[in-house]
Every structure is written in structure tokens, then in C-alpha cells.
Amino acid sequence: MAIFPQVKYLNIVFKGLLILLLTGILYFELTARENLSEIWAVFQQQLLWANIGWLILALALMPFNWLAETHKWHQFMTRYEPMSRWKALQAVLAGVTVSLFTPNRVGEYGGRVLFVRPENRWKAVIVNLVGNFAQLMVLMTVGAAGVAWLMGRFWLFEPLYIQLFVLLATIGLGILFIVYFNIKTVIPIARKIPVLHRIKRFVKDLRVLEHFSRRELASILKWSTIRYSIFAAQYFFLLKFFDIKTSLVDGYASISVLFLLQASLPLPPITGLVARGTLAVQMWKDVSPNEVSSLAATCTLWIINLILPALVGTFSILYVNIAKTFVYENDRH
Image 1 (cartoon, rainbow, N blue to C red):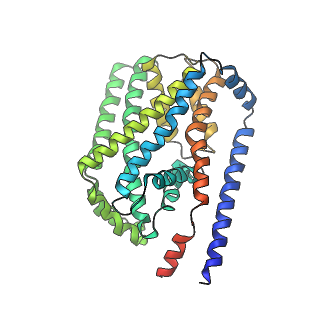
Image 2: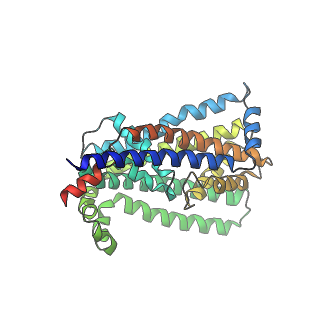
Image 3: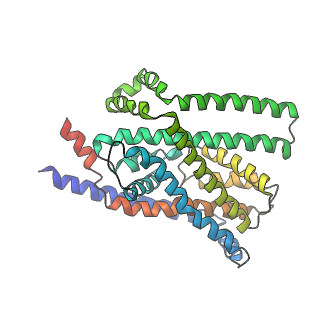
């Protein structure tokens, strides 16, 4: 019983620091931009009846993006722990909040496990790993197709080099798909990795991978494709909103390559906005000489799909006993 005041104190401190950190980094990231006033001016300029429909469409798709991710994770977590869809959505949004401060959104795992029982936290991580692997394969597949298109359309590569790229990409992606649909073969390989032996519970729970049938893996891949399609559509709508003129095929090809490049940056989403904005400017410079419009589209997508869900996720975390996992581990040992 003596540990309860300590647990309560730990919860208060952690939640307070999380809110302060989120607020501070948001303020710094936005105010540090020298052209913030220009981005805001362009945004206001585009708020016309002729354009506002594109912004509304981008906003309207945001809930479907995270509902698709929630379904992808929830349908398998319920095997190990009863969980309502509402609680699963809270877990996903909490993961968005924590992921803002970690490279390649690693913190997403930590945010979600706050909403599952401590004994199931590694199962939650493994289920999420499978989902993220599927999402990565979709991103790489569409991104490779986009690169091949732009190599011939704008970058003017020789046909031989384009064919070589397509061949290598096909082989690489083929290997990834074979591994994915035979995911349980990863178990003996993972068990031979020395560093994982220190995480005994994780190694033990790798048996979760044996529970995924190929039909279920195909379902995860389907929902990952839906999420990607929603995200790409949002960006295309924002390009229209900011009057960046591009055809449907060229636009989606460029978006796919941009997403691929941005995902390769080992930076937290919240502090990597400048780098991602720079990539966007380079990607759209051939179709839009206005750099501010390119930055504005990227910044708006960032706010819609990460900042707004992260703010909701922050409120979700406020109602979670963050210390319960650590207490559970301490009690067991």
C-alpha cells in the first residue's frame, strides 16, 4: 500500500512533463520558422469559396485515417485482451502523441501499451510491429512505382536505367512480401539475436506471430493500403487548395516519392518538419515556383494528421494510470 502515493506522484509528473513538452516543442517549431507569417498569409489567401472545399475534404478524411489504423490494430489485440473500439482509438491517438518526440515514430508503441494490461504489453507491441511492417511495404511499393514514373517523366533517365530500377525494386519488394506472408519464420531468427535475450517476455510473446494466418495478413495489408490512400488523397486535396497545379498521375507519383523520402528521415515528426518541408519544396519546384505554397501544404497536412490527433491523444493519456506497468513489473520481481 505504501507504493500508492509514489505511483500517484509518478503519474502526475509524467503527464505534466508530457503536456509541457508537447506545448513547448509546438511553440518552438512554429515560431522558429522565419516564413511563418508568409505561410499564414498564403493560407488566408486561399480561404475562398472556390478553394475551401479542398480543405474541408482533407479535414473530413482525417478521422477515417485513424479509424482505419484503429481497426487494423484492434481486430488482433482483442484476441488477447477484451477492448472496445473506443479504447483502441484512444490507444492509437495516445501513440500518435508519444510518437511525435521519437525518431520514425517509435514512441507509438509506448503510447499504445499504456492502454493494455501489463502482461499483454509485448503482445501489443508485436501486433503493432506487424501492422507497421505492412504499412511500410505499401509505402515502399507505391513509392517505387512513383520513382519509376518520375524517372521517365521528369528526371529523363535512360530507359535501361529505369528498367534496371524496376527489376531491382521488384526483387526487393518480392522478398519483403515473402517474408511478410511467412511472418512466423521470423521467430527462430529473432530468438538467435543476443540483444533480444535480455527482453525475455518479448521473445516469449513472439509466438503471437504464429497466430497470423495469410488471410489475416492480407487483411492488415488491405487496411494499410486504405490508410495510405487516404493520406495521399489528403495531400492531393491540399495541393489543390494551395493552387499547386499538377495532374492526377504526376501529383500522386510525386506524393508517393515524397512520402518515401520523408519516411526515411530518422527524425521525430514534430522536429523534422523543417526537413520535410525542404523535401516538399524540392519535389514541387517544377510545378510550383512558389516555395511558400509547398511549405504551407506540407505544414497543413502535418497539423491535420499529426497535431490534431496528438492533442486528442494527450487528453486520453491524462486518464491513464501510466505507472501501472512499472508497478506490475516491480511486484513480479
